[in-house]
Image 1: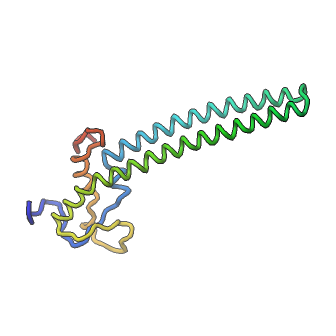
Image 2 (image 1 turned 180 degrees about the vertical axis):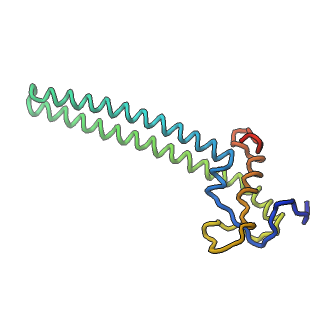
Length: 168
């Protein structure tokens, strides 16, 4: 393409981009967000079910207390406390894994987006693309977020082989 400029592409030595918007409004980001929300919803339901089971078990243990020796009750209460702690740790680990999936997907997205962003830099003659949030003042024309989303959607799609800006 050389130095020919596509319509709508700004000509500036510095460009800005809104990384959060770039990810969240792309087909790839929307898919990841849906998946993370679905995983989170499953975990929330699972947590509610576990909480209900543990409340029932705690109530049964409390009801048995008056019929048991103190030492025997203490052993059951300690075992119950360990179970609660282990369950909490397991559920917290699941939440960390869901969060990590989102972070990994973001890294994958930005790595896969670099060639598109580099192409925009070449077209505009820009020497850098800055995070829009760190720029004190700039003309709106140097923000390439919309342009980048459009092009990244055409190249990456939702990240599962479903490309096309018309799929939104």
